[in-house]
Image 1 (spheres, one colour):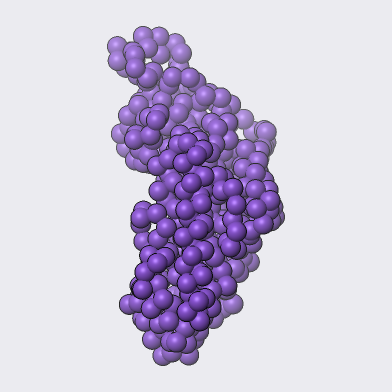
Image 2: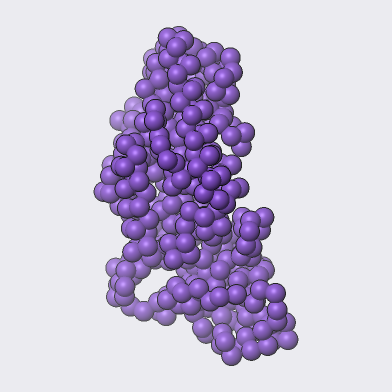
Length: 378
């Protein structure tokens, strides 16, 4: 922990505005409390113990991870209730069992009879009972079992009759990222809820246990009007927010807590360019806003205090160079506007992707700067 100006940092650097992040945490937790469900945050966004501890302190119960390495690291830090929300394959079962043997309450997921059969066979062979949840497809976006399909019941039976613990159902309405009106988001949130609850009801009607009904994405979590039948919500990017969430309409630019600190290193005056030392290796190559209502290029330009500079984005990027330009016109005075040595902050399109470019965050609390390490790998 140091008390120093940002000007002393080497750039590019990933900054986390603690005040904004804490407000995001409290907003989501308060909403889940009001809707009467538990919040199990997806920590793949931050991959950071310091962030997760603040989410848990605010009232979150358990975490969601996208890699077993995340599960191992968070368990080592004392967080035991973990949902590994990526389809389980046989080659990863020894790693999952080792975590559970050490006391981690790890839940795994499957979305096919074949995967369920493999988990059950491994569990019986090693005298271990895995807790397994079924992934349900509620929006056609990615993986999962159809709520009304025969495979849902068959997969549940393969686990239950195979000696495993059928712990519940889970879903993720990733298609919500393609929406941008309150009405559409509310409808998607209700679709996510109703279809996942329907899957749980069908399992129970077939005589199978289904204690947990887990739904969630940041857009649907912030748009749901009711969550009857749901036990928990999973959301991740809300903790930082990003420009995709701004375009979706569930965040304001002033809510975005993650930014990349960068320095102006040169100009192409005739082109209206200012060159900075944050290229796609810092911002990532994610162009998630490209097909949305507002294309922010590789990120929105802000001054060093985090205030957006209207009309300026990182228009293009090379590996270590970002090119700042004014949208739709050449700024002949860009060298005077952003002199060499000027420090700027860039808001990211996709917080998860940008965060993944850095080994640590610099947490900013007024003039206090603190290094927060983050995890890598699988």
